[in-house]
Image (cartoon, rainbow over all chains, first blue to last red; front, side, top):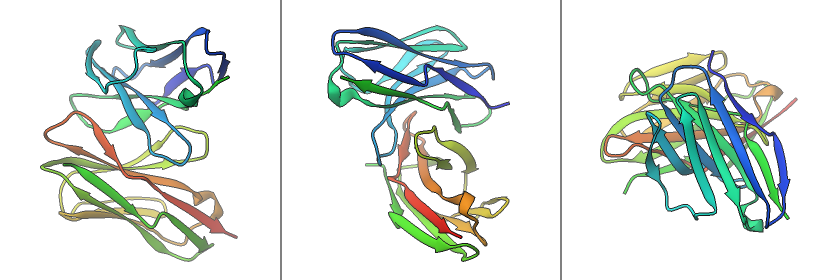
Length: 113
Length: 110
């Protein structure tokens, strides 16, 4: 099973709202990622957690705040977003020891109004 | 600097018309090259990993090959359900992140 789940599927929020995106995997993977994808563009890396510790932060604005409560869960907390933050947010995970491919979730379509 | 370039940007085929997608890469050291399929509004679906030049992987109508400078995704006798954007990504030995190409949007007409 190579399933990564993400909730919610769709989210509409105002610029003053606080919301969270959630990601879960039960494959025993110890690296998890957040990506942002705009229309007709490839995914852009935002954050990498390896063994529940933040290992890569691609200079993402502080209005995005990641959290990794345990090895199966990954959250992305959103606050005071801008309309240009509207995008598809993808979570991915990777088995660090045996292989390098990342498995992506279905994404959360975020619209900021 | 690591770089990945995919061509063509878009490809329109008739059902049954075989073709190839190209992914050219420049990396300091290749740890792996990855092919994904992405349908509109969905997450990328993993297809193949290639680790070294000369390696080939096959899955149904798809075959991925790798040389020292590029990878090809060959599509044999495609069907309309193969229509999607195909993404190539490279993982270099110096970094813990994928470098994605901009993708090839494939449209297979019945």
